[in-house]
Length: 159
Image (cartoon, rainbow, N blue to C red; front, side, top):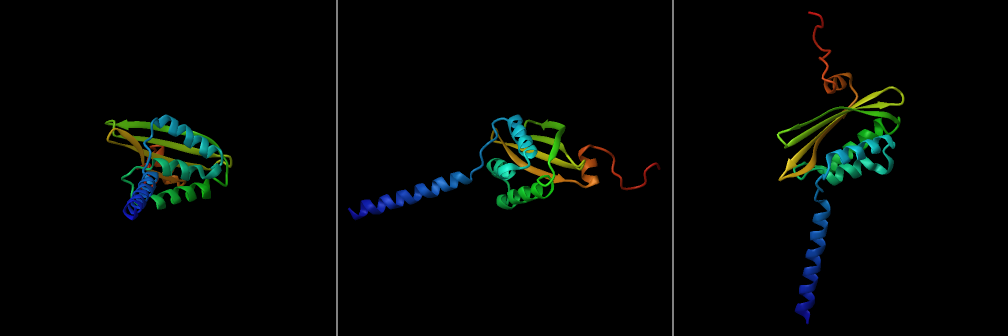
């Protein structure tokens, strides 16, 4: 009877650890356009209910290093900038898929105070499933110019 109880506890512990491990496994993105709509809704809703952290944490790919720090960074960066000033409109700058392995999407976030923020997202296909792979977010003039594919302002213009 003792052996059966012990075996049951070991089985229960294994099950608990398996469920915990599965909870941290990223969920593939079934439809990148749906993800994009969720992202836009999140940003225009003034980041209601920490939606950036929720959206990114679920789909951040298995190869991402330091997942928790990346998710916290994304959440705090958006809150500091876009969360305080409502987004007026999200402009899709480009969508480009390369070799059915990488999908790059670029956006300009136009805030109600006329500030602009750029957002660049990469999706990566791993074993036929899409995940959020990398993102960058910023408001510097150089970052916005790079997102819009404008020439750099550094150097000597007109020469």
